[in-house]
Amino acid sequence: MHKIIGKTVRGTIDRPLGSQHPRFPDMIYPVNYGYVEGVIAGDGQEQDVYVFGSDKPLKTFEGKVIAVYHRLNDAEDKWIVSVDGTDYTDEEILQAIHFQEQYFEGVLVR
Image (cartoon, rainbow, N blue to C red; front, side):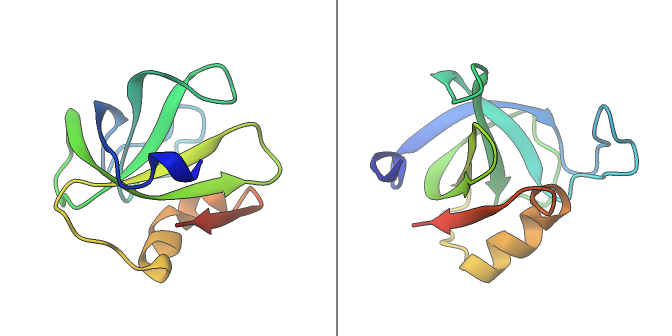
């Protein structure tokens, strides 16, 4: 998990900032959310990422992994990617991903 931090990754945004969750329409994404193509996560799907550093909905991204949200009660971790070079604080990250991660137990790993 720690080996990915600091690496540059690119991928696709499938739930852009401001969009609704496909199964829970009351959940609105306050950050861009997507995946890294070709990297398979613990759930057997491509690696999910929260993308920080853009105040506009994105279709694709390229940025640096600055942290990993390690879910303790789920099979997958979420990578935290910065596309603007900012190293967001733990508090900024946890606040922004709370909309979805409030339903899981987890820790932010740096």
